[in-house]
Length: 84
Image (tube, rainbow, N blue to C red; front, top):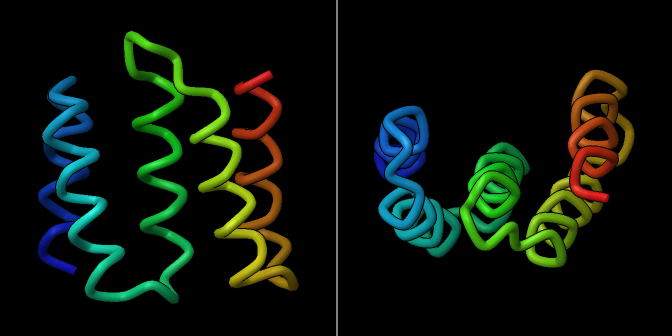
């Protein structure tokens, strides 16, 4: 949880490389938390390189982990739409 929270802090400060690094570490510690994939997907989406394929992969992973939560699915599908 620590790395995810710190990643969010980096993300909101526009330090996207640091954010992605922290999200990577958070995923290594807990591969079953869809929120971390969502957060990393947002970092990919908003990076200067606009890494849309990586963003989609993370959003898809989050959906695969928690497919039946309509609240989570709605924000993930919204984000996937932004990445097109």
